[in-house]
Amino acid sequence: MTTPDTDALVAEMTAWRRDLHAHPEFGFEEARTSAFVAAKLREFGLDEVVEGVGGTGVVGTLKRGSGNRAIALRADMDALRIPEQGSPYYRSQNPGVMHACGHDGHTAMLLGAAKLLATDSGFDGTVRFIFQPAEEWGRGALAMLDDGLMQRFPFEEIYGLHNEPGIAIGHFRTKPGAIMSAEDNFEIVLKGIGGHAARPHAGNETLVAACALVTNLQTIVSRRVSPTDVAVVSVTELITDGTRNALPGEARILGDARSFAPEISAEIERQMRIIAEGTARAYNVEQIVTYTREFVPLVNDAALTEEALAVARQVLGMDQASVVAAPFTGSEDFARFLDHVPGCFAFLGNGDSAPLHNPGYDFDDAGLVHGARFHAGIVRRRLPAA
Image 1: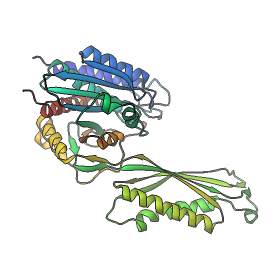
Image 2: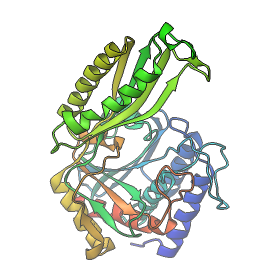
Image 3: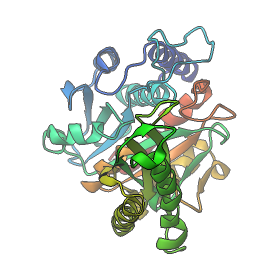
Image 4: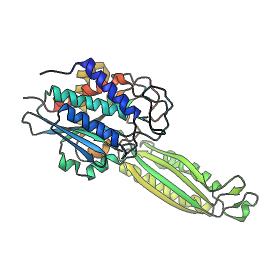
């Protein structure tokens, strides 16, 4: 059996990643990206490549030997509506959209693993390569599942990677149990009577009520949820229909909440409704609360996390794979797959880069080989050749 030359594969993955970076596409608009992925998978000689799964998702299947077990590897493909401020020669050619979260790198490293495994299998069974759309707004995994992913391409466990700025290249971090939080979104609309700024007593303007409500919402975490439970409530927007000399008759408060357990999410919503109702009554305005759950908590399987750590220590080095002490309050819709099968999600260092979702961010191509080797390694460990 032969293995693609490492330097040649790294050069290929780098070229793929930079091409994808130059042509970013927002969620469910990844037509060029999915076509690029599908063409590469067919070029590698996979047994089956199916496009259009869940809209713009791609699933590649590679079978070797006679084993009847199947595992899945997943990468996300979508970009963000952020204007790029960096200046690499491969900078975004799609104005207002950029790969500010490294999904171009995730896609390239999984393509690299597919080429490695197609060329020099070293496993016995079936691998599903899942290239997912629309992760950023929490809809892509559900779309693929709703399109029959588990029935059409069954698998028994799943693995995923995400880059992490601030951690050295080649370092791997994960933990068993809850590792990423749920994300709930909320909108609170206050309705009153606006009017002239010189006559506030003549109506029931909403801006002062909205400011009070923003402050009152902070008591959910500080006073209404146990200090031993992790919870975050963030107001991110306050929008009114007022102008410089007119008091607003409507105000909208938007934000999100993070937690790691359904009962905490439910308590945040309950307390938010109580506070909104009480504050609105105090200021004699009406209130409407809309509360939605966009991401569920991401909970790694304990046994498969140990397997992932064993592979990372083997391919990256004993000192470069570690268990994090605390979960992250970011969210990931990889969690939706874990509602169906066990698996493990982990982080790979992206070095001293700008933060995720920053207009100056760029994926460090030096990390591509480590992601590809981890993906291939977990397949060979979980589907050992006879």
